[in-house]
Image (tube, rainbow, N blue to C red; front, side):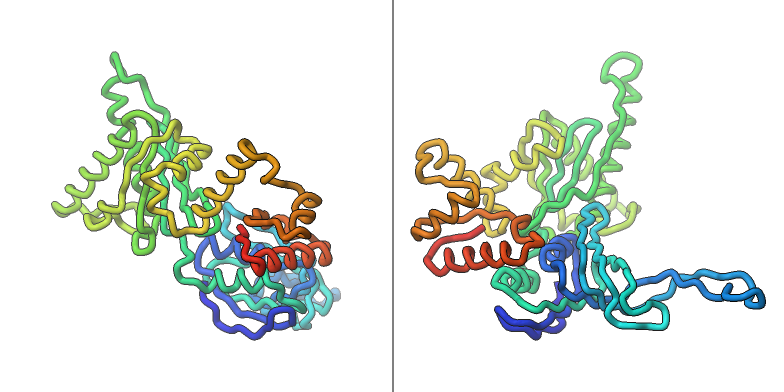
Length: 356
């Protein structure tokens, strides 16, 4: 995320101008923008011209590029399309859009956006700091693979995004279908590698974990080695994206997973060989904190509390060591409720506790 301009004070009003770079930045924007904020960005509007009277001819519609400033009434996150949709009323009259007219701006990576708030609380400030941190990027890719199925995910500091799913019907390994099986497996591996090259930015991703049951991951890595050897011999064909090169081979790490379905991602992230690779990410810290909570709940249930009433009661007694709270709590439309939890987070930190 590029922070172009910052003009606000904690607890007061102000604005920031940002340029999101990747899907994780879009998740942060979704959590940063709230109802009654103002969002200023370039968008497109369908405008009808002509057709006002019988001499004007037929009406014609066209999409025009305009800059609008909306007072936010609703925010929606599109994880599949890497976009945030902001709906609200226009507060800046233009030739194409009347003052007070409803419009929806689609925020996407690499498009500047200005966000104005009447009050920047501690959570907003922390998120802006996290957004502008160059280290807070998706530096780990996980490929879950078995014969005929592969799921590719990017694990960032705050959000995990599944970028590709590759499926291939596989014939039986024995009998007359054996030759067809080898050809289908080669096609499947080629499609999976193409998805990796299309979705993984090797200039930023530090490690690609290949995980799955049995020997499927080993067979895929043999295909990767064969492809690299062939390209070294002069065959540099690729399906687009960032082409895998010999220097990227060392970024691949293999580990076991019981399945190639998405649910196995948590199993991979808890693998000791992988934990060391993501030790410095926010995701790893949150996984450890959640595991500690469940262990405490099982062994010493009087030391692990959950639910708003019990958590606030513990806070009143300054008894919180670690506070786990989801982003959904802060997306409430009740401003008073958000202020209460923002104040709780700040006070827990001030008392020496940790928050996730």
